[in-house]
Image 1 (tube, rainbow, N blue to C red):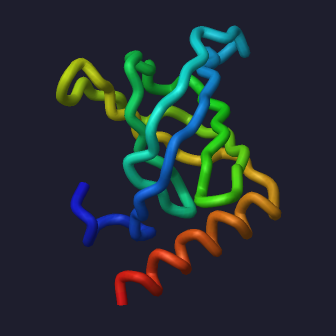
Image 2 (cartoon, rainbow, N blue to C red; image 1 turned 90 degrees about the vertical axis):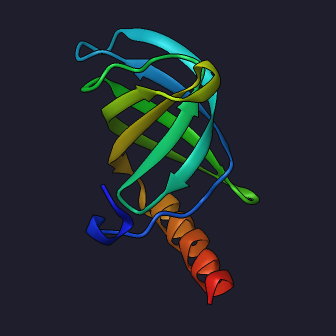
Length: 114
C-alpha cells in the first residue's frame, strides 16, 4: 500500500516489546522488536520471529521518553532482509493517555518534516 493510499501518515519510532497470543489467548511467543513506522491506527514492526496473521499482539512501544501500551491484530507478516520479519499490526485497543502520547509524537514528527 502506498503512502498516498493510507488513512494516516506513518512515522518512524523506536524499540518495543511484544507478546503474541492466538485467538484463545494462549501466549505463542514473547520478544523484542523495532518499530519501522507507526500511525494512529497501526504499526509496522521488525522482529526475528514470524507472526501469524489474525493473532493478537500486546505491545509496549517506546516513543522518545514515553512508553505506550497497545493491543492489535496482526494483518500481515513477511520475511525481509537478514532473516528479519516485517509485521503489520492494526490497533484494536489503547487507552486515552497512550493515544494522546502517540498523537503528540506524530505531531512532533510532522513539525520536523516541515
